[in-house]
Structure formats: structure tokens, C-alpha cells
Image (cartoon, rainbow, N blue to C red; front, top):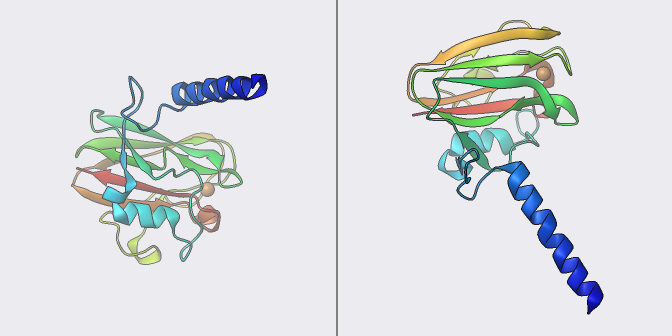
Length: 170
Ligand SMILES: [Cu+2]
């Protein structure tokens, strides 16, 4: 009896800590709101399929809702996919006109940012590229999401590891 009660208390404590630290989903009380990835099937498919590259293991089935921001920074070379081979956040929802800045962390180099419908699943409404993959920190690539639609992108050297991202623009 004593043991099970202790276990219960400990588990409850852990869930509370995760809820506060994670700030994802479930309405987000003061944290970052999310929307279901299943509402954006092209992004959901791109980040989970393994036909082109690998699945992005940092994707948890939701898009970070940043429709209230004019700008958004995406860490390039964030932890994930077996090293520093992820974009963070990798799945976002923004408003038309939002300027996205991909900012290199300096880890897991070199990286780039490529929205190339021909090399992906053909479902990206956007096409852009930061150019050749480069290393180092302090590198930035900016792009303004000026039309409603879906942008699917990836890092060319790390596509096979799942370094992918998706942006829904509304
Ligand atoms: Cu990369």
C-alpha cells in the first residue's frame, strides 16, 4: 500500500513537471499553442514519411501556432535526429507576411535550407534555397512567407537523417 501510494505521488509529480517544461498541446496555458498536424496532411506526411529522407524525430504531431508573430526564428542545427540535425521548431503555422529567419546554431554542420518540390513529395507551394550547405554559427537565411500555402523544406546533407521542416501559411 505504502509503495503504490509513493509511486502514484511520484508519477503525478513527473507529469506536472513535464507539462510545465514542455508547454506543448492541451491548450497551452500561457505557453506556446499548437494545432494538430493532421489538419495539415502535407506537412504531417513530409515529417513522418521515410520514402524521401528519414522521418523527423523531433516532430510530435503538432504545429507550433505562431500566427500572432511577424517574425519567427528557426534554429538550424538543433538537437534531434541522432545529433544536431534538426530544425527547431520543425513544424509551424504562421500568418501571411511573416518573416522566417533560419539561424545556424553552429552544431552538426554544415546545413542549408531547401524548399525544392521536385526533390520532395511535390506538395510544397514554396520554392527557395539558402544555397550551398555552410557550417559555423551566426549564419542566417531569411524568407518572407508572402502567400498562403505550405512550405516543405529540408537540409540537403541531412535529409537522409530526417532534417526536415514544414511551414503552414494562413
Ligand atoms: Cu543539416
